[in-house]
Length: 446
Figure 1 (cartoon, rainbow, N blue to C red):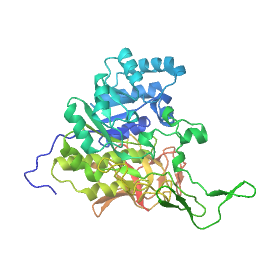
Figure 2: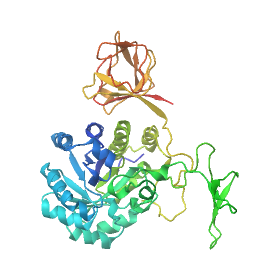
Figure 3: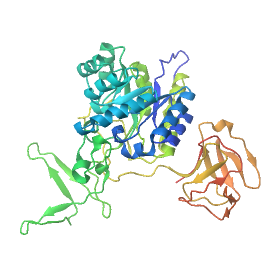
């Protein structure tokens, strides 16, 4: 808790992922100042790019600007010569939408973007791996307005870059998946699946379940290892690492924990050098887009009011599916031997299960996990204060221990059908007893 003389520094932009039009709207509803997303394989997220076509992305740009917010277009893939003409056409089409910035990764694409669309600011992708003043200066001289720092950059080094280049904006990741490779420059997926990470189609091979095999000295065949323990040893320095495999699951030797810097928001803001806080996760769920944005929004607002309480935000972030959390490298150096790896699971459940996603108009919802009559579900919303208590023949909204809950007495679909229960996969919306704020969620503790 800060004292009464506390004077907060300038609050940086909160930048959230927009994997599709719905997630874009959710991120803005839950407090994002800006969103980022893209169309096509140039956006470094093929799956996410496929959820946007040109027209829906145009709608997203218009929706964002109508709310006085910003949107940045991801064009941060690494193009081959055979793609350059297509890239030129893509830049022209994206420029016609008048976004607030292009996120690009290479000097050549920086130059090409300036030539085609000199009016669109350039943000340099984290893929460019800027770690020092020299590299930052080169890109600044090329006309880059903002650098999205390498995840390996320390806050101390960010301060040095800002001292040398005060007009250069700095953006850092504060939450989301971490790649075990240097700034995501990884080829495991390409080698194993033919899916090139830096062209937008990473298969997340680092998250796979792997099994132990050894070579039979007599037959030269690889056979499953049946012993209880196996070690990797460096003969030069004698360091030995136990590789553990859970029976029936496998081992996760490359699996990094997720980044979570919520505890360091005060330190980041007090440095005075960070212009934008970025949340990773365009391919993650709608619930993730809303909850991460809401947690960091509240942390920023509470800090500005001198009322930052870390546990408030940690609890909400813990409701999300995650791989365990790490503070990454902003505070610590990459080579420090810290607890940044998750050797046990590709991903773990959060503390809550999402049961339903409320529609944009707030009168109906889609089921995401089993719902039965008379089972209370907690309401989650960016505007929970506006939710009124009440009761009718369909259900009720009540309050308990400072939280608001919805309980259905019967499950009525918008098509008029009544069900005894509803399950995930049923894409027929059900009617809510009272309207809720747009894009609210219903959830239950696991």
